[in-house]
Image 1 (tube, rainbow, N blue to C red):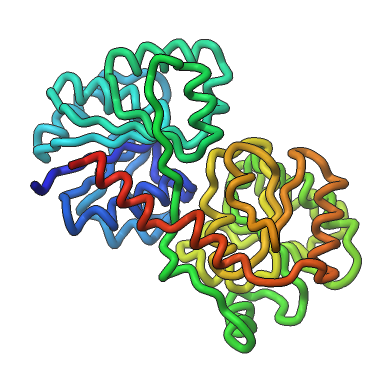
Image 2 (image 1 turned 180 degrees about the vertical axis):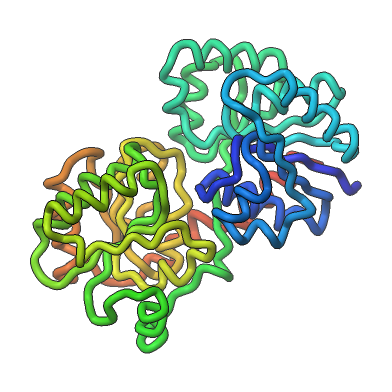
Length: 359
């Protein structure tokens, strides 16, 4: 039976959680009617930062929530649930659990799936206490996006069952580029054609630790180039740091990319050196494009690094990062990580698992 599903996220800015929600909406739409609610912001702001949202405009809803607890937001969400005839709710992260969970209870929605994509927000006692109450009252089907997140959720909330559904990507979309095609992509992105390109796709925020990446990059010999996709509050300070270190001509800030495929295809190496993660999509996307990765051992990252072509390092360990990059520059690792990415991060497996919870 076709259901009307309402996914709820905190905001619709480019990021892993938001991308996953959009992909689920796209993949589930043939079988169900799927809508996506952003608690914060409005459509014009969102589509300006992320043009791909325009293609699904009719399925998007924005509640323009302001900071703090908002009874008005809860009321608007209840009205939207009734107006759309929602029969199942899927919330992502803590804020959406609060509003979607209470709205679902008020409007008598029987099926509520809640996915946690990381757990570092639960390190604060007040957040754990609120989460514990919400899980008891709402009783959602609790999902973790990797085993590490599931383990921590079980530790914090031992009486609540948790199941793991790993994030996935569209393997038919993320494919490699070689030879002249790769050079053409670099030209279109305004990047040097012959250099060794090291890329990172992440919000320019403290948690992603771009500072360490820049400090290590400065030490590298040769004509390597660092390419940063994404935007955030640290953009200006990171750009100023590049200028101060004398590497401004070797670091390219591309900003948010509406289409990530050309970015990955143009690279030689992908690095994500975050302090905290859940199960990020970007390393899977890069490896599906046959690009080796270097990741910090946080969250579920250890499960998505190809052991033949990639490297896992300690968070905050600049020496390990430098050694790993040098090994890649010297070509000490051969082969393609694409078969590994297909084995651990196929979107169809993710969609099928969620679809089974909705039947």
